[in-house]
Amino acid sequence: MKLNSKQQSYQGIPLRLIKRKYKHFKAKRFTINDTRQNVWIPNKHLDHDGTIKPGEDLDYIFRKAERKLELAEVSWGWTRD
Image (cartoon, rainbow, N blue to C red; front, top):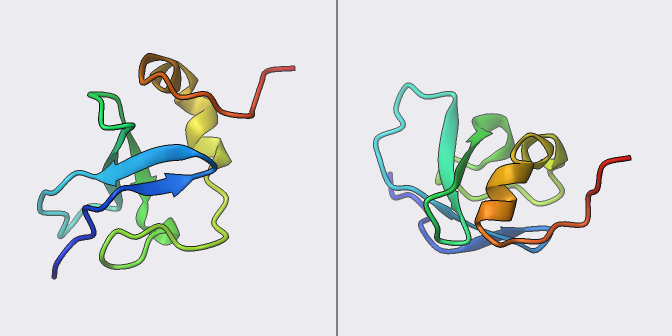
């Protein structure tokens, strides 16, 4: 199966799937803004080729990765209360 390694976006956050063998993994790894910062996105939010499904809510992933977004120089609309 060919993986989608094109740049994708979630709420303005540029993401790119890291190519590797994900046969038994429950998530796939994405780089943030083509930097060394990365996040794992569970397969339930992805198509088989690694494309993010439209309308998926990934906010919980990026709330945990707030520092990674900062290091990747990406601004995101969520702020702490």
